Length: 377
Ligand code: SF4
Ligand code: SF4
Image (cartoon, rainbow, N blue to C red; front, side, top):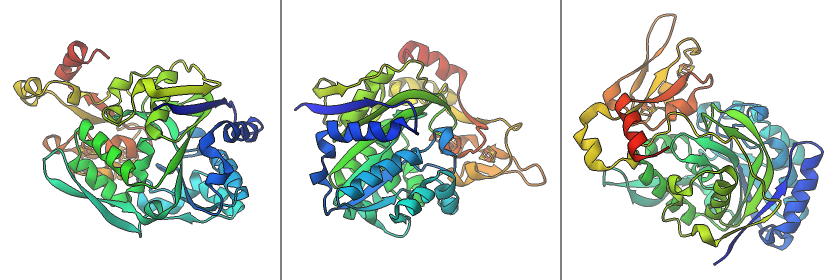
């Protein structure tokens, strides 16, 4: 079955944006007004953390504004929501990302997912044991989800776009917990696929006007990409993004076994070619190594956080984000994170949580060597 992905060019969030959004809504059959009329629609931007729009960590608020306006015009009953990484600073996330201002201007409710969590399914984790996955009621009860991801690099999944954005429908503390149980990349990928299966029908619109390259998903640098893209299948959209960004889809774990084949995906419209997209330097690739090799090398194959104490401000966000309690802060004036190495599962939650880019995920010397021979990256 052909999976259509529509692209339009868009190089700024000012004059060009409303025109580009109109073009996208005209081009994509999945954005036809009749799909939205009278329906309860959840719009789900990426609100990972409390960064400014120009830092390219979160979906740009002006794109949200343009999409919300059109959905309202079609007669949809719109709600906006996401669960950021740091739920204790929810209002700060809403304000700094510019999302709360847009929701207030456009008179649509901005909801917290934290109160509506429901147990939805059980899934075997990396430990072989079934774990309960909870999801936000607002996402499950919507009649249609409009997924608005930011296009970024990612330490574990290589690409963070339409598929990965769904992880925000798992409310805050549970998100961190599940990282612990789905610690292997392929298991985390399976978890994302299963979450998608539980959601109502959806359409995804990717914010690729300015994306993130390098140490994503929160400490890379903004990369002008110049496009918006829309598709019904988030997997098809991410396959298309792999082509545009020159990323090997075989190395994006959640695309494996997702039910969409690369050759089914058809790219339409102004398909861009984006140069210079870089994945994180310490990309976690232990999963790609054969099990016998990891076992044979004992405890010398790892990827762990290293802290730049010159940048660190001792805020403790990395400590709160760690699902294994492998980090603690030293006492005294200069509070510093300290790692208990044997408890680290290389999930990179600390790297993602750090507001100062002070956490680098570093592979051991042997991991680096094995990557050269076995991963070819
Ligand atoms: S120290 Fe960082 S990488 Fe290790 S388990 Fe904790 S959050 Fe994950
Ligand atoms: S490493 Fe980053 S998140 Fe951790 S305490 Fe320092 S500044 Fe905060």
